[in-house]
Amino acid sequence: MSATSRVWAITQGDPAGIGPEIIAKAFRDAPEPLHGCFAVGDLATLRRAAACIQRPGLPALPVAHITQPAQALAVPPRCLPVLQLPGLPGPQPWGQMSAAAGRAAADCVLWATQAALHGQIAGLITAPLHKEALHAAGVEVPGHTELLQAQAAAHAGVSLADMPVRMMLANDELRTVLVSIHVSLRDAIAAVTLENVLQTLHITHAALARSLGRVPRIAVAGLNPHAGEGGLFGREELDTIAPAIAAARTQGIDAHGPFAPDTIFMRARHSAQHPAEFDVVVAMYHDQGLIPVKYLGVDKGVNVTLGLPLVRTSPDHGTAFDIAGQGVADAASLIEAVQMAKRLSQAA
Image 1: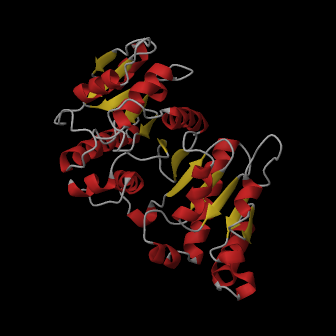
Image 2: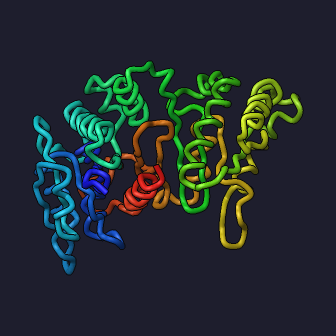
């Protein structure tokens, strides 16, 4: 196994948010040391983060400067390796949106994406960025998912349409994949087309078949209350979603539905007392799919981008400007994202 297949980059996120401090906490407090992981960002910003999480009775977190990804493998446990990117600004004021912070966050993601696409790292874990700061920096995409998609498409020499991606949010109990991501609700409803639903089913099937080692059982949520109630509350289920499911089934995809969206997530939730009927729910829009997973606890949720030629995961929360710099942010979701990235890298 090459060194590059055993190292993972964690982007620092928006330096004014909690990204740097949850990275520091993860390296200090994860149940298993984050061997082979390193942060991509600004050395002074990560050192400030290590200082802000310091508490009486807890060991200080050493921060090591590395210049190549593979050097992370030689860093001792409970030490934070940082690959300094040139041109990044130093520490930014906590909790303040700025173009400089948005640009720094984007540059870290761009570097890590290119490193993954060129085989220099096994994958990347992205700490939270701030979408308004990203826009202020002139980055004309809504967020991480679209930025990664654009980079991957350019690398492959194809259009965005030929590099379709989907967001999956997952924890120990529930997985959900979205037909549309960061668009208005009006546009999300318009995105419920046969082509988009069928494409989502193909992407979900391919990704989970690799990670599970078997054909996944896919439930599909309806768009309307009660999944349309036979057309009484809308015809999207009859005219669009059901035909997409039927087409997917003829192609070997184990898809079922459309089901009433207010109950299908309970049927797909796994617990020791109630084994799940399905491995994943395909949801029609952002909040329909993400509210159930986040309600189960943001400390365990992991965002995974499906459809990319690389592994990317992320915690399922934002920059939390209101608590940034206080050292109180919870690193559990980031730790879960690292563990998920390593498992996906092994399955790829």
